[in-house]
Length: 141
Image: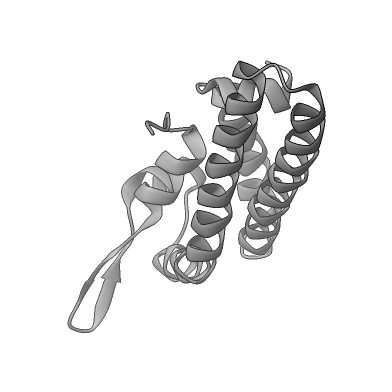
């Protein structure tokens, strides 16, 4: 099943770092967008590295669930649609909660000025969500 990439996925991918002997080189987009120091960028990367596998697992579960929901709709099975839709909405909420928790951890690293830039960064990310029909359905876009 082809899953459209969201800005979140792109952000998570770009935040990954390349580790070299004694130092980590943070990815430029997040670092430059927020004006992060190397220590902040490293801490943000560590947060992401720790949290991303959990998010990725939830996203996979959500994608499988959306497949079940699509099959129920194709079969015109209204009971299954209601059941599968409720599960999909729960999983989507859990996925968004994981994302917001990570954002909250990153925000704790930021100065007040960087926090304002992060707000703009998150706003841009929200505007780009919805590239897949699954996300459009649950974000209202």
